Amino acid sequence: MPTYKFRLYPTKEQEEKLLFILEQCRQVYNKLLSIISESESTPPKRKMQSLLPKLKEERPELKEVNAKTLQMVVFMLYNNLKALAELKKKGRKVGRLRYKKRGKFKSFILNQSGFKIVKTGNRLDRLYISKVGEVPIRIHRPVEGKIKQVIIKLEVESGMLLYASKRLKFRRRR
Image (cartoon, rainbow, N blue to C red; front, side):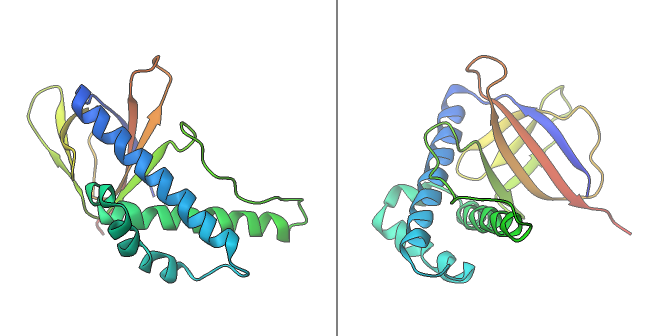
């Protein structure tokens, strides 16, 4: 499945919203990891996803984050658990998953909804992100097919500027 990487150019206000979403995803990841750590066996993924509405009631600021994004945090957590289990099965010595400190959780995923590319005909197009707005993006090559997933990633290569990368995953039409 081909992926593309494009640079976002958010305004200061949009940058703050994106960092806020990233922080909320980090806190949800840590909360779910603590629930898994306290239980004797790993609960099923669906049970963890069913906890998300309860977490939203406890913490109203989570309503500022797209629901699919929070579901993808659960998916990321279980992917990490699966990777550890596979390493252990191969005979490698593995520990436990660690809680993510500030600055160590660097991406969030918009899966199937919550985003849309708006063509402007200018050098910078716009990426509509749910709960953030239209963020300028430079699409430097054509994207074929339908976009299925967008990963917003914080890369601190250009100083402390938010160099967010976006990966577009799509299925080709046959």
